Image (cartoon, rainbow, N blue to C red; front, top):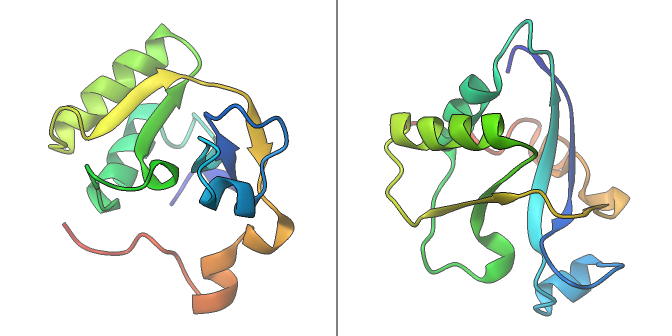
Length: 127
């Protein structure tokens, strides 16, 4: 997507101070997440969210590690997240919006997984 500078996958939202893929799969409370660095001169936070949530499969009854969430850093991001979900027509209660907890990078073999394994992006399903 134009304006995206870099991405990192990781874990957030749980109590384990040193999560691993194994501990997350084991139910330590963390979610698998993606951190996106983007150029606000090219794409806004809200545009980025709308794009992601038009493509993202939402699951109400997913295992905790696969729950849909937007972790925000301030009230402006919270407002943008709420507007983006409404614009993407994501039903209430499907995506959690919460303050950003501590971030933990995932293991290196998880980084750029779809790019390496499938030669492209994971989120490509039309809506």
